[in-house]
Length: 57
Image (cartoon, rainbow, N blue to C red):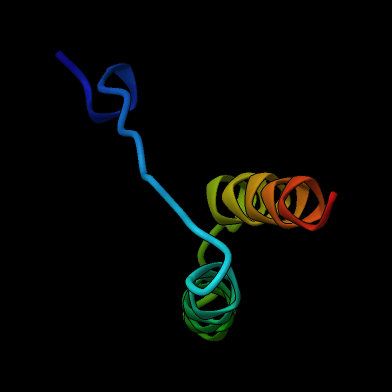
């Protein structure tokens, strides 16, 4: 079983969403500094931003 085969789920509420986005941005910046690919982190960031939009509605 590969790491990508395992699905993980988070429960996020309105008060935590900005903190999660900030943490993912820090991780993305660290990946960029180390010249590593950021596709997976970008995908997670997009999902968090979509969740934030849903929580506003």
